[in-house]
Image (tube, rainbow, N blue to C red; front, side, top):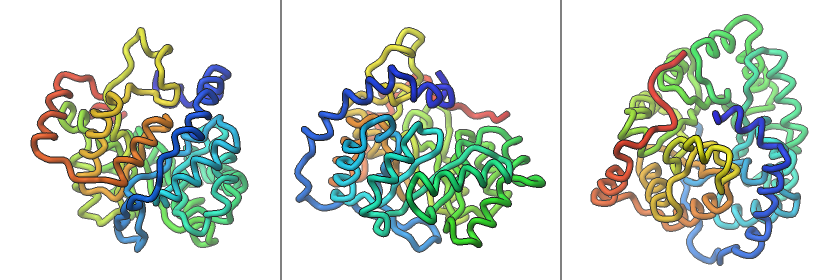
Length: 323
């Protein structure tokens, strides 16, 4: 199942049922938070600093308001100030908007949208602001760019970039960025416009088995963009037999083995020249991500060798080559 199909299916009864089964874990396994808070890094040229671990809105998707409030409060208490969401994440905007109300002036709220037209993107922005209970988002992003034709529509007549720039002038957003699942499209987007940020897969399997990502990070660094990472805990695609029957209903890919390989994979990602990484929406992996963030140490050479050895021959979730 591809990411878009996975997200469309995310509001189905089966996922709702599976997600709600996680709610007792949010109440029962909250760790003590008296250790050092998750550290922060500078976000490119924006002047902002973000926690090195971000909060994916999928964590609260199809869960109860009380679950959302509890886990958001815990995340803020542990030092997270970077929250990310999108309209495609079921009811995550509604849940996150309510849960974030007590902390809105303390966090960096980002949202993403996938309508490349001026009219459609404007409607999505207004709806996101309503559901998130805010008058602005700190960063608004084009979501999951994967084709060169996406850029042509965005920058064409009556394209979504007109919405983004007008909204920035009106104070409805502060910074403009994009996420992408294609190396070629990401490189072209950075040539096309002075984006503030990029959200991109930075993953040990992708780097070692597909050479997917290092060229994007290098270009973003040259442009002094803020760099946020996706898929640090990802491993490979689901097998045909496991695709529709696995224990991670909020992961469209197979995550790295819990907890050791996943923690090491995230440490590898955080050891790259990035600002922050967003763990999966699976609650167990998100909690592990917070633990890794609070006690983060750069990956050592022996650890990296062991991690890459385990990735040898693994099928990456993305490959080079854009449509």
